[in-house]
Structures are given as structure tokens and as C-alpha cells.
Length: 204
Image (cartoon, rainbow, N blue to C red):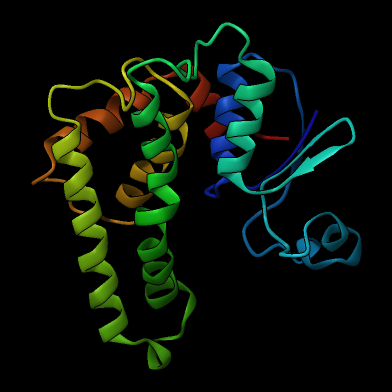
């Protein structure tokens, strides 16, 4: 199994889940904006020129949430990281597995563009303000849901590697969680997991 990875990218989610599943994998490491990801041989693997890509035998898949669903379907044989479809936790598992990409990351992407990627003269304060408002709304919904809960779907699951990682990213970008204590404590619980520490510290 091979993971195409860059620090501070969604590939961290995949490395984290692979570690939680105790699966061995080879890492091909890049950095965000690496010209190597625009090379023809890389674009053959992922025409979007992004990470992650997971190669598992003759399977190649590149959307981080799809990779998570693939990995638990193929390798989580004891159901440690994915509730059974008949479990009362299964609907929540699906909801929060997809909440990150549906609700959190779109405004995060806009904030990154407007505050980091664009030069100051090209930035749009209206876009930034709208994205900040949408992100705060999404995080408020998540904070309310997490009241009295340690994880998103009963016990720790693959959903936490996706939406939990999104919470970590928002904080790293400077999101104020002072009025969202449940997310703040959830984030700290996740950062204590050795599998995540290892995913954040890949050095190959």
C-alpha cells in the first residue's frame, strides 16, 4: 500500500486512519504547492494534481473521505472504526463522515485563498467575511452536537479522522474556539492519539 502525502493537507487524514487500522504503507512525500505534483507522471495518477492518493494493489483512489470509506470497508473487519449499518450510531457516523467536506472545508478553502494564497491587492473582504460566517455557523452546529460526547458516533471512528481533522485545521488557521468549548476539548482528545501524532510527523 502506498500513500502520496503532504504535511498540512488532507493526506494527514489518510495516514491517521491507516495508523489507527495498523496497516503498513509506503509514503511518497510532497509539500503543498510542490511542482512535482504537476508533472505528467503525477497527473496520470491524479489529474487534479493533489494529495492524498492511496494505491492499494491495482486500486487507486484520491478523495480523502472516499479513501476512509474504502479502508474501513476493506480492512476494518472487527468494526472498531466503523459502526455496523444496523447500529444506532451508523446514521451519525455517515453524517459526520461527510460534514467536514460538505460544511467545514469549503469556507476554510476560501479563507486560505483570501488570507494566504492571494496577494493583498487581489483579496476580497466580502468573500472572506462570508466564508468566516459560514465556518463559524458550521463549527457552532458541531459544538452543539458534541455536548456530552467524546467522539462523533459513539466510540472513536473513521468519521473522527475526517471531521476531527477539519477541526484541527481550522484551529491551526486561527479559528477562535473560545466560544466552542466542546470542539476545543474534542480537538485536544484527538491530538492525544498516537496514530494522529505519527501521521503529523511523517519524515520520509
